[in-house]
Image (tube, rainbow, N blue to C red):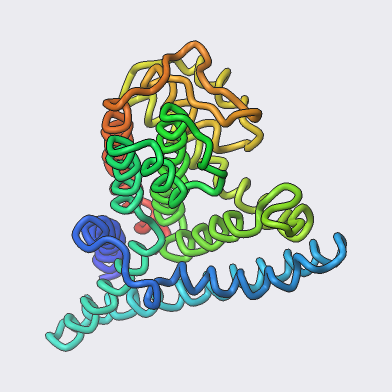
Length: 332
């Protein structure tokens, strides 16, 4: 019976991952009022309004405490819900009944829905392609649509720079919004994916160097930035490695050389991999240029970049599903 319970748990976790990706493909993002990441953002916004106004030392301490509190609550809630689901699963295995089966199915679907909320492939893919579609209408339309994706000023970007920024955003967010949440789910279940998403959201909202929109985040956001760096370190390199495996268009030596050109210890890896795979240069003016010898990206490169990203996700699934089963079996 214990062996049966372990097998059931392992395959349930793999099923949850598949269900989450199906929900993402079929339905996309839930309404903002029902989105857990929006709730995380509201908490971070409220805390950030306080910490950013504090002196450096106090801002750092309060920012770190707020981050820890948010991560603890997020992880605990996710752990509790997943625990309820697994408890129901154990009960239905030991004493099968229709009522228990229905309850277990509801809890499983809820966990899958929450995991879907921690990742976002459909929206990322759609938004990047929307930038290219807008760019075909006019440069101004492309700039405006790009501003939905990036925090930088898009008002003076050229057509090539708009396309570069969209492809960069695709590569970076392929890790942040897809690969990394799945990576942490495989290792730690729903709590792992949820805490990672909280950390990544905190970095997006707080993790600025110096002044951003009139407020100095250098110390108030430092803990959030470093926490995200730590949690993204392995997934970012995994994303780049999978790009290398699935495209076969560049060498690991070239990848290592280009990946370290960005200020971030992580974002350079998926972006460099994408630049090398497409044989284009990607740059942020005055900050970095990846694969400088590459050509300027063209219209077809945006679609090709999306195709490469899709291959990376499929390759990850080939590894993630058996890994989920093995890890869940071992833990059980």
